[in-house]
Image 1: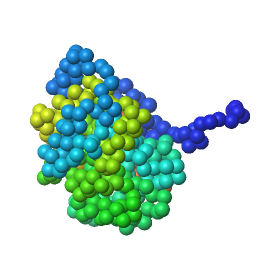
Image 2: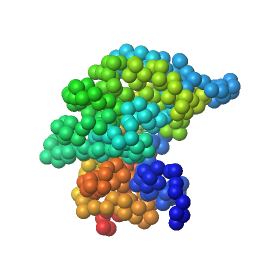
Image 3: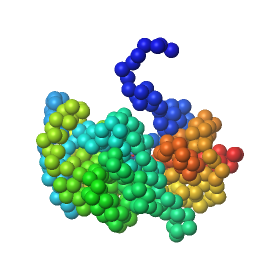
Length: 399
Ligand SMILES: Cc1ncc(COP(=O)(O)O)c(C=O)c1O
């Protein structure tokens, strides 16, 4: 090893691939493997969205187009909230810096300095705690409790535990609802309590609502912090086109930020990416049309069908169970007797030819309960999904 000193931050040098990456690298692109490991549907982006982007390219929209997104798209996001949530969001609070991931990073950049911490409800999508690490913060995890005695079994958020995890260096509370990997949906009452606490303590809320419209109840959208918070609150709400519009490869999403950051966002968005791809924005504009709303309905129906396939499968299993998700498109499946999800998921790829994510990827090492789980994405062709689940059942039976 070289003895030369290095300018690279130790935290960067120490970074490890998360478990989703480790497992998927064992078989990515292999046609024999049924891939349920990533957070995406197998549906291609609908044709009317692709056509809109193609038209934009043919019209020569290949230039810089504004670091916070083109004005009509920012206005269409405001209109989306009017239509879906019945709330008014000032366009000055809406920016499209790139994908939802970049919107989250942008929110973190606004609040976290080296040594600060972010308290997050877990199990949680790993990129968020890796992003906190990249910018020099510390992630603190507050695990949802499992209530298997409830009918049906459910996740419960212990608000006191969440508040007790906050200290003087806590700059943000991060919540994704509906959650990845749990499908848990935060209630209005929980949001009210968290907002009151955050206001009192001067803590920001980063609310990840990328699965906001993928909910199985009566509502069109899961309860949103935008229905409670005002533009004066230090509340950031993130959403994007990846999930509900089947546009993961487009890398476009948005951030609703506090009103006071209007001017600063011009600078931050230039510094981060100078905006999303020009032609992708025209696809996104089409996604926010009535045709896009209709597609979201189809996408939700596809998720519902996938969820039913998993429900029917689990009814035949006595060693695999789940807390039924209320939203998003994941099953977080607990496997009896399994204690090392990374080894289990790696063996599944190699031997059973089905790709899943290890539960350990969504939690810190001390969270043993998550290590007895795997995550699957069920927004898939039902036959392929059934086939993948059958392979899983065989592998569990052989243990
Ligand atoms: C909770 C959550 N937030 C954000 C994202 C990222 O969205 P995007 O692909 O638009 O960056 C994901 C993707 O898996 C996610 O699960």
